[in-house]
Each structure stands twice: as structure tokens, then as C-alpha cells.
Image (cartoon, rainbow, N blue to C red; front, side):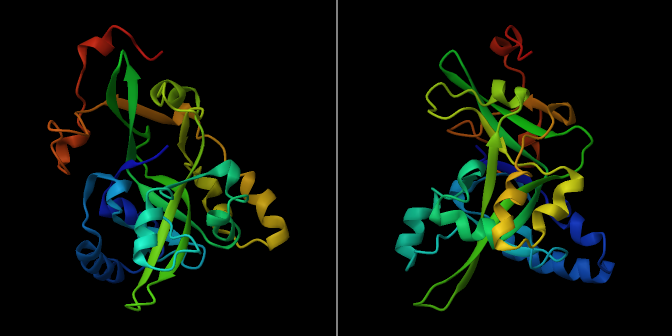
Length: 259
């Protein structure tokens, strides 16, 4: 699954910078730093942070969106808060089957640029956090679903999103190895560069399921890298600090390599 990520503002703005005037980018950057809480050296979906996403309706200009898709049936914030932790991720194989995700899978897909993500590996009853990223240093553009939700009491409009997941590649199978999980190892949907625009493309409803499903596949492991990092939970957690992604060696793991 994907619950812990790193997302620096420059990474999240990279897509917009391809086509926008530098002065416009600086203006967006100034405004969004206040809105989103960047930089996120480490943040978890369970805090429902605000990130920048690129939607099929706004493929070049980032939109501030909150992590945790608001299902169509949510009527108030109490229901929203109850549902939020269950919609941080959307299993790619079922997004066209579940009512919470189906309409977004057809009509509202998005890209969430991140620097990388964190995953915990289980070994002899303990968990060890790993930071996973692209070998070439480029952003990981995650495939997601989005939806706007309006609070009928306050009139507040929230843009919300969920990260789509897929089956793990061989590298992630060994890292995402929770023995208590009933599901097979998973990983976020990381889009190859050439598939980004196809993910955002507006398809006819009767063609959407086949077209989108063909894009949901594991990212090639040879394009990824990883290393172990300091604790992301509990008293030893240092918080959202720059050094949180620095490599930390665990002697007990050095004797049992992943590969």
C-alpha cells in the first residue's frame, strides 16, 4: 500500500514548470506553501495532508487536494472523517467495481508527484522502514483518483484524492512483506513518463475501464532504488525533518539481504 510519502514543493511543481511562465510559478509557489504545509520530507496519509495534484481537468496547473477521497455518499464531516482512512488508497483491480471509486475512475483521474515513498519491511517480528525512489532522481508520478466534496453546512469545497495501488514488482514484494496482511504485496501505481498523459485522458465511459485498466501495472524494479531509514513511528520518530530520508543501517538486516 502507500501511506507514507515525501513530496517537496519543487517536485510537485515540476510538471507545471514545463509550460508555465516563471513568474506565474513563483506566484503559485508562494501561495501554495502556506496552503499545503510543504515541504513534506515525510508525511502520512492518516494525517490527511494537502498536496498538489494534476487532474484531467487541470493537467498543467496544480490543484490543492487533501489525501483521502471523499465518497459520493458522504453527507457531512462526521461521515467524511469516518470514511477518510479507508480511501487513502484505491486498489487498482477494483476501482471500477466499488461505488466509492467508480465515478472517479471513469471521469476524474489525477497525477500526484512525489519524491518517493516509505514502506515497512517485516523481519523477525520487527518492522524496518525503507525509502523507495527512482534511480534517476526524477519525481514519481503516482496515478490517483480525485473528487470534490461540498460541506452543505459551511459551503466549504474540498478537493480530495486517493492513490491507486497495484501488485508489487519483485523488489517491492520483498519490502512490503507484512505477514499479517491478507492481501498480496502491493505498491503505488507509478506511471511511466510516456503513460502520464494517457492516465489523464478523457475516455468515453464505455471505453474507460479497458483503457485505464491497461495502465495499471507495476513500475519496473530496475528503475527504482531503496535504502533503510530511521524510524517513522513511535518515540524514535524525528518528525518531518530533512534528514528523515537519510540512510540508516540496521545490523540485523545486513546479515539477511533482500536479494
